[in-house]
Length: 159
Image (cartoon, rainbow, N blue to C red; front, side):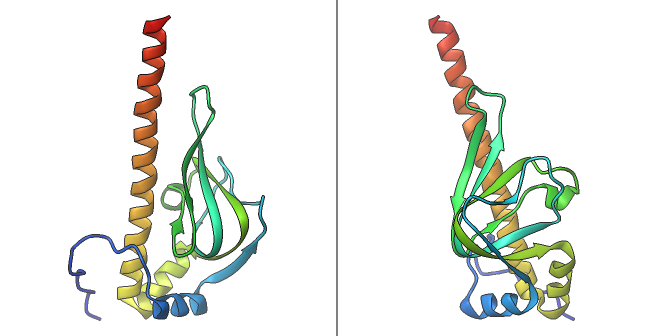
């Protein structure tokens, strides 16, 4: 089996085609989640990420700042959400709150491996989306940390 070729820009792809979504719907486990419920919570061990088919999910991270919850963004149709626990097998550092009734496709390590066997290009595309999702979370958390830390230092010098 030939290795998939790099995409034209050599940057992670962030959207799936309709045909790729249909293929994933045939492979991945579908889950309906009602508003107010959680896809996962901080501290839980989670072995899956999710591709959002319908609805909105907010990622939240606990912090030591006066505001104990840091939003890592709200994600909708076509987005991938996951926690680093997907890769580490340790407890999650985020919580995924369902804001309105949602339908997701669960991406486990096992079914990602199955996709790799069936359609290597689709698996690579999904990996790229997952990498981009984790990078976005890291970037938001880092930027928020820097901002809040600078704000606290400013408040302490003014006191």
